[in-house]
Length: 470
Image (cartoon, rainbow, N blue to C red):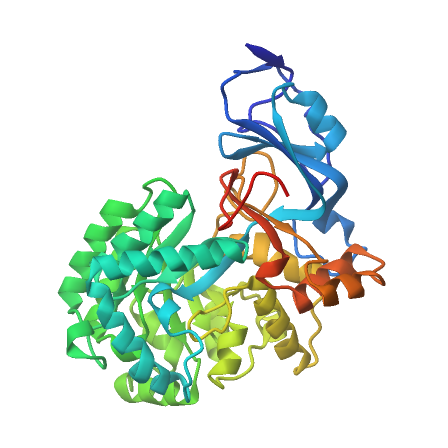
C-alpha cells in the first residue's frame, strides 16, 4: 500500500492557479497497482475566452508543469515539483518538455463517411452532395466497409490531436455501429448519430419518417451512455427531410433531452432558396427547425453563414449553437462566418473541420483558415482565444466542460502535446518568438499533424505510431 496525502479526483478543488490542495485536504491512499502516471510539460488550460495575454484570469500556464493521471482521469495539476511530491514514488514520469501540453482538441462537426471523398473536385454544396456524398454514403450499408473507414477516420483524428468529435454517420444503422465500435476500441469520447433523410437523395439512401425514428431510437438505446459514447439526433438538413421526419426528430429530442441534435443551416444561397420552396410557410430557414422543436442549448447548427436578424434572435433565445466550418466554407465557396455578429448577439459558437467538405482533419489548419475568414471581415482573433476555442470553448458548446476541454482535476485525461519546432520553417520562426502567444500563433499558422508529438485518450497514448520514448 502506498500512502499519499492527496484528495481523490472527484473532490480535488482547483481554480485558475496551480494549487494542488484545498484547505480541506484529506488523506487518500493510492493502491500500488492503480494506473497512476505523471505527465510533465508546459501546461496550458483555460477557464474562459482570453482577450489577450494580459487576461490572466482566463487561462493557466505552468512552465514546468505536470498532470497526475489516475485511471484515465486527471487527479491533479500543478508545478512538477508539487505533483511529484504528492504522487507515489512508483508513478511513471513521461517528460514532454519543452513541448506544450493542452487538453485534446474537439471537433464539433465532421462527416465520418466522407473520409473517402475529402479533396474531391466540386462546384458548390448541392453539387457536392449529389456528385460525391450520396454515392459514397451508399457504401455504408456494408458494415465491414464502415469499420474499415472508421479505423482510418479515427487514426486521422488522433494523428491530428483530436480526441473528441461530433460526427454525422450515414443513414444506415450499420454505419453508426461501426463508428461507435471503433471509438470504443480506442477509448474515445465521441458523439454521433444516424443521418435522417427521407427525400431529395437516392432512393437506396433514403429512410422514412417512421423508420428513421425507429432506427434512431434503437441506436440511441444501444449506444448513448455506453462507455464514452454519446448519441446525437441527426436530421441532415431541411432539404432531405419531410415535415413528418423533422417532427419525428423533434419527438426524439423531447423523449431524450440529454441527447444533442445536429443539422445544417444557411450554408449556401441555393440551399436556402430550395428550402424556401419546400417550406414556404416557415418565414425563414431557422423557422423550419423552430417549428418542429429542434432548437435548444444542445442543438448544433452547422455553418450559420447567411443569417437574418430574426434568425439570430431566435438562436440567442433558444441557446442554439452556431458551428463555424472555415475550410469547408472556403472550399465550397459558401461564404464568410460572422463571428463578431454572433458573439454580439449572444449566440454560442463552436469551430469544426467539416471533413470531407472541409479540407483537413487538423484543428490547427482549421484555426488558420478561420483566422483568415475573420480577417477578411476586419475581425481579429488572438491566438490564446483560438486555442481556447478548440478546447474549452468547444467543450462549452457541447455542455461537456465537466469532462473534456480542460486540465482541471476530475476531468478526463484527453490531451495533446504540441511541438512548435516540428518543421524547419516552424523552428526558424521560433528563433524570434518572444511569448507564449507568439508560439501559439506559429502553431496555428504553420502547424499540422507534424506538430502533434502525442495524443492521449483517457491517459493512454493513442497517436498512431506512438512509441514509449520521444
